[in-house]
Length: 164
Image (cartoon, rainbow, N blue to C red; front, side):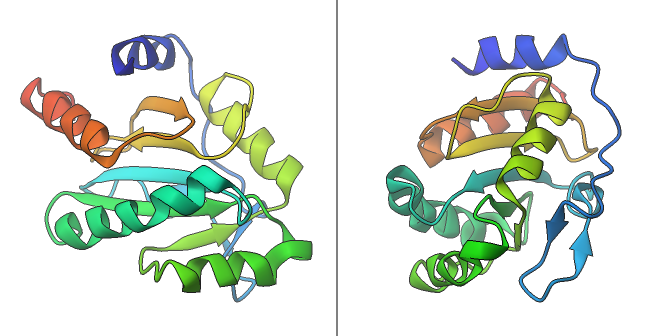
């Protein structure tokens, strides 16, 4: 599955990751994706929604991954597509799952358009994952639930192959 995704991502010429007014932290400050990727660690970006059943099931596992590897080689960034109208519900999601990795929020259409701009493929739904190398290259994207061990295996394979 990941090999197909890597091949598809490799065919797309990715635009610069601008989007400074699309993503905000929960205090309302704007952020760019560049602040989080390409910082010397593998970056897993998880697009989520507070009412996504699979997101609610997987969030605790991704928090565990973050706690295990944040001081070594992996970081996570959550991006809620809930928007300002559902910000309280999104904050409750973060609190309920005790997420300590950074989370941003964006308006649904703008955030899903950003995904399409970054990947060159249409938005399907949440959860959706992007994986960036330590140097900031997008190497995989996947819509739907992805077990943490599959992502860890993918990162290990890419690291062993020198795809940093």
